[in-house]
Amino acid sequence: QVQMAESGGGLVQAGGSLRLSCAASGRIFSINAMGWYRQAPGKQRELVAGFTSGTSGSGTNYADSVKGRFTISRDNAKNTLYLQMNSLKPEDTAVYYCNVVGHYCSGYGCYERGALFNSWGQGTQVTVSS
Image 1: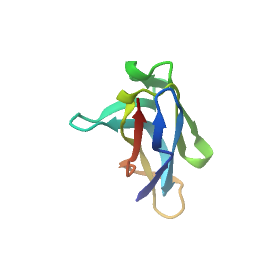
Image 2: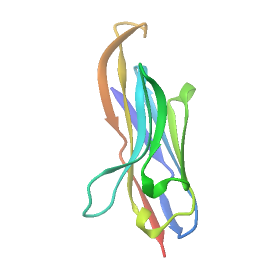
Image 3: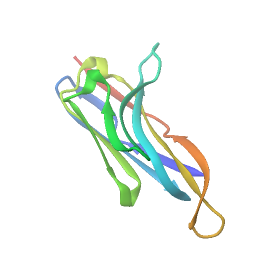
Image 4: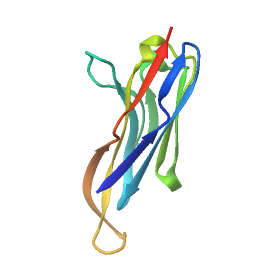
């Protein structure tokens, strides 16, 4: 089982900044993708920013609405994901969720790749006042 611990949300005025963190822990053999999603009241959950990796390479992607304002980063040694949010706008108000997709360790120790997992954080509220 993979545990996810999010932090960093809060209330900020428009134009302000916040930094979200998400630490994944447990029997993790490898991580294929990490990302931040958000869900505003009455709307569907949407991808904000994410890392992907695979046989064709790795990369990042951002929602058009946050390009140039948000920056995703990670600390691979700590399996921790960050989202630096600058120039926040009221329309950025939402619950932000981190997501990690990867493989568990198999057997004793962590020498073999096990089953695929897809884990979500508990969500952290970001509120931007005008």
